Image (cartoon, rainbow, N blue to C red; front, side):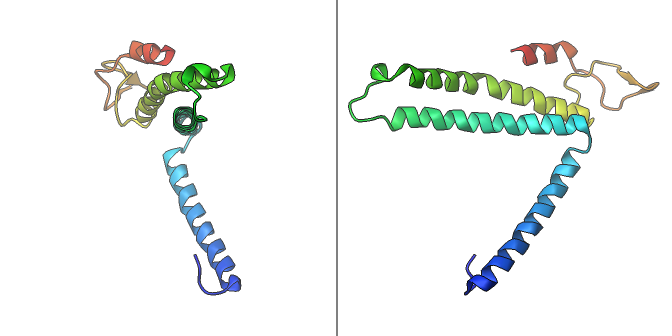
Length: 142
């Protein structure tokens, strides 16, 4: 942001950054109010960053090779990064979706993994029913 002089730009930028940081912190505190929610949210963010990194590696390897360098002339270390990026793109979205479903179940919004007639502290949970606990194990160990 340019407001004319450096003496004005710096304080205005600092104030705007503090306001943005405050509202971002409030949003994260509302979404992750306990430890388990914070754990789910942090792993979802980690998965998203891994996917973006894998896309970056794949795009770089396929589009920015030297002229004349074919895929089979690339060094072995570049091949290992390429294969690892492909595996990350195949496996991480499944884990991120399981974590998102767990987060929604934890906040009692959905019942993906909670079985029918689930009883919590001697009362029937409102959204219990239709979920499969074994589904979590299958998706997580994928």
